[in-house]
Length: 284
Image (cartoon, rainbow, N blue to C red; front, side, top):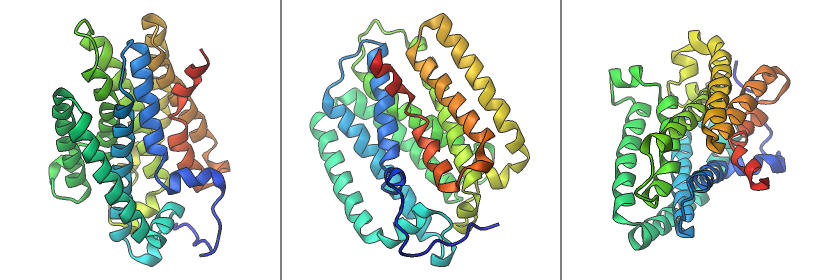
């Protein structure tokens, strides 16, 4: 059933504005980049945080504009899609400005090793968009785009600190938390596809919810497994990153349990907000 249309002059609540403007993704990315630097004792230049924030924001804005342009105006099922349609001209200008500034900073300040890994990540992102646009045939069937999106988000958040890490860094100890962070990001993306299934159908964008609906009842089990495995590994490894992953997975699991009592805009906002668990460790 499609979500009911909202009045055109309805003012969005303040807690929804970060999601409407696409600022939640950059905030999550920077939080996790910070906890990687803290956990592994890496001194990361401030400009790298800005590069990541701008990169995440431009990707999110481009992705959202793509959704809107693929949908008919009367089929926009979510608040953020209606907002994007209404302000598409301004958002395109912001996208161009952010992308230009991001590219300038990359050329000026990003070291060669990080530029190379960034290009690899960008190539994988290209595969993600090919899947979204239906140009990959069976690959799009084998690899849920939500899983690819979550893993790429985690990788993009972690490559900056890795480029500035000391040579003594244990690669396994570093990338194991990246995998678990990627899994919880993937779970968040899958929940979004479930809560926004109408929007994906409207934009002719096959999602986990529409193509793998038989697996939806098992999402809660997967989240519970992520909680226990991440928490257990955090205990043995003394890893704040894995503990933050466990906290995010637990918060998503609780939200899923109460989804019938929450509005769809709130659920969408929580899907990103509950990944901000690294902020907990600012207190310690």
